[in-house]
Length: 309
Length: 113
Image 1 (tube, chains in turn purple, yellow):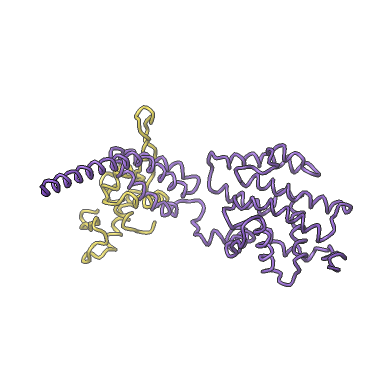
Image 2 (image 1 turned 90 degrees about the vertical axis):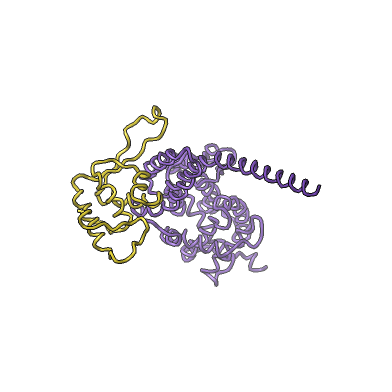
């Protein structure tokens, strides 16, 4: 009796395994064509921009030829992806750059920023993380400066950015973004719109009151967190500093009021972490560039009130 | 002349069998005994050196129901260079040693000329 039960159990298990395998095979076969196209798309994006469309079409055509064997076509796409870097090395265009080269041949401020920001992980959650890290990064360069003076320098830098047509740091970020090639994404559309608007913004003196209207109710911060709205957000945040410096009557007492204003600005900077995906913050990019401005900064480092404190 | 590699020599050798024929990647990989992934860097290199040229298949993809292929062909004026390239490669290999790749066959000089 037990032998009969064992035989029936074995048969049932075997039957279940066969059905399971058939289902899995069907599932994989169903997904393979999509995965194949995706892999070929990734492989083609690793090539110079002028060659991408050609190789993508060529590889898709050859994968299509294996269409009756979807898993074979998937394997083909994997091999193509694995060799995409070798193809790139043979083609004219941008020289192949390794990770560390990418980091070091960019504008030095940005490259340094990334490395330093990576080396300084956030110690606390919330907006003050940036504040804390900025101060630490700045102290790497200016260990003898007081916190207040570093804060002033940060504010001074923001003031300098505002009237500039484009911050070099953001130009570099934009170019780096665009080098990935054209694609029909919200990011690229925002970038294109931003470039179209830049001459208009540059030609308008004084506060750029059009920015919030032109960039949505968020006041210049686009929910897509792209470079383009980031640049506009940069200007929006810097605008009060620029106005304060242009009109001495509005200049807040330093550094006590500046501290509060600057903390508020840093709260806004906190949003940028999402764009820079984690610890690499634009705030740090500014901080690294700040020491260059310290020498020319002539505001008093403390007020009488602070001296008394 | 481009740097000699096994892949490039095998591709040229396969194409030299019918110098005026158009080849597409998978077909060429199968004939030359190469893996599909490795053939594209070699084709790109040979194309950059001017030994090969490539053109799109002249079909209407919508009518045919498939994407057009990319065809590779030896540049007629460079066929002699290609032969020289393959010959140099054969000479460079030591025939007494085992081939570096299983698919590589070192042909006698009489067959490569």
